[in-house]
Image (cartoon, rainbow, N blue to C red; front, side, top):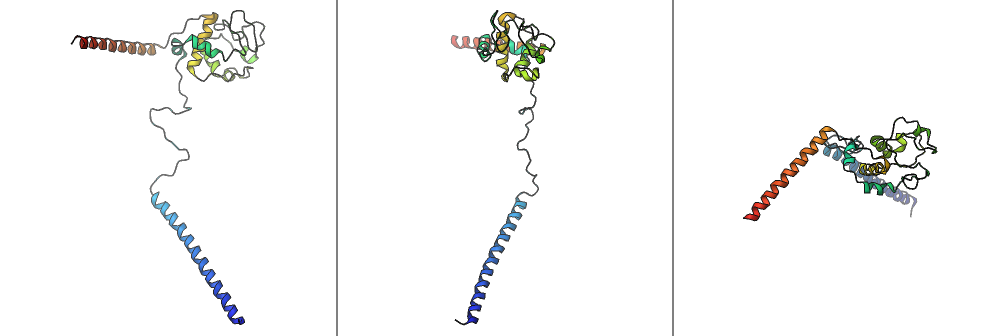
Length: 219
């Protein structure tokens, strides 16, 4: 083969490769352009995707919205002492609660409600807890059980707390029955009135149902 033909063959091969590369590049550019145009068409006049997904429904509380808890006075009215004793089993590794019981990692808790925060003689309370003024009552015991470290920052108590209001109410009722026996606080007046109306409505429905059953049986 002559040198001239060899050179022409090489040039023809390069031209074909360049043509193919050009078509590939042109196809890629066309595809990209089509993608951009499609996105603009389908999202025209539509709001941008929010940074945080989801939306708020009016009248529905969302998590961590600072939901107000049911007053402890209402919870105690429905508390179960036996269930509270079962919940208290989480505490027995550190506390006794019988009359004359020994201190352990934590103080003996017999007859604690109505007493000062550092009332057990001989127990080395942390300054964070012993310096809190006032006596233990249903409300501050509830706050303590929610989070000891928030109630008394710097406390030696490492217990994480009880998350369920029902568990706290039950265990407070159990603790109160162990020597304290304080009267439960009255629920708020408006709540008591609502509950009384609900009970009256339920009684009326029950009476109407009984009359209807008697009438049906007599037919």
